[in-house]
Figure 1 (cartoon, rainbow, N blue to C red):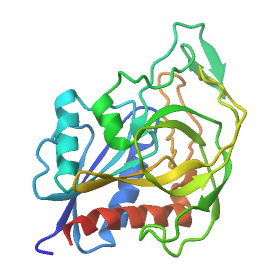
Figure 2 (figure 1 turned 180 degrees about the horizontal axis):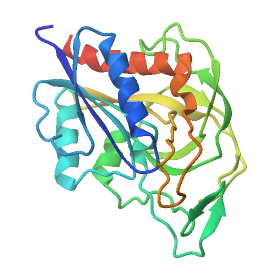
Figure 3 (figure 1 turned 120 degrees about the vertical axis):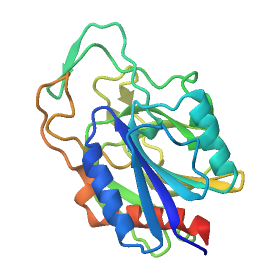
Length: 260
């Protein structure tokens, strides 16, 4: 490898503690002396990733423009790698009402599943589209693939987080899975009675590059739910969990490996 492995972090959107995610990701990257990191609060600048090894997305209800999606697609097809976390595949749109209160949060209506017309090229790149999530709860994470370098040597573990439900797009290699069922209060698709293995980490080829997606990772700070509530309970979710931090570490290393 010649020179550093440059990685760009995008953290932004709504209803999440992006400061916590950004800080943790930078701390993980600081452990790897190959990496030099840059940060952004939006997709501005993603059309200039020449010389970068990878990009990390921790966003919610933040979609790239068509031009930005094309740039991301071209970056990965050209050999770059993308690591998307949690709600990067979620576009939030509400029904016309009536307003409801769930978990103390006042929302104008039920949350619709992310539509197929929303950023289709970007969703194809990510490999899934957000539908809903259940209330945060303990989850048992099962290692589906012990052969892939990202999960080699890992064992099953338990974690507390939001169980995400998404529509897969295209083919991917599932590395971690979990089973869960129940209600998704506040969502149009609010009843999930079946519990098939749902991907919690997958990797997919995309041209000469690749995409890694992990739905785990909810966190919310004191003021992150404004205007739905003035102050929210602080939730760090899995970000303090050593198993989750190991997944971040391995995901970041996978990005840097694109330069080797």
